[in-house]
Amino acid sequence: MGIMSFKPAQLTIHSGETVEWRNTSLFTHTVTDDPKQAKKTGDAHLPPGVAAFDSGDIGAEQTYLHIFRVPGTYHYFCEHHEKHGMVGTVIVEG
Image (cartoon, rainbow, N blue to C red; front, top):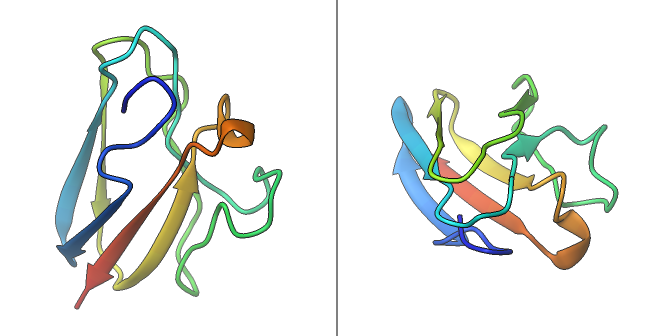
């Protein structure tokens, strides 16, 4: 995570792999994939049957890990900076 972006903005992995987000900025960020919390339709999307997730606040130099077990496309956002376009995508292949 940078100042107002996820880097890379899109990542392709295989099911069962873990993604680690590291906050390299001084701003607090989140990794949120919950359509109910998104202010803009499409900023959060989960494959059918997958539970929403939210990292909570990730401070400077902190990390968040999430294991993706179900194939599909995941669109997520930062709760604090969604309005600035801080969104990302993980594509999970079977």
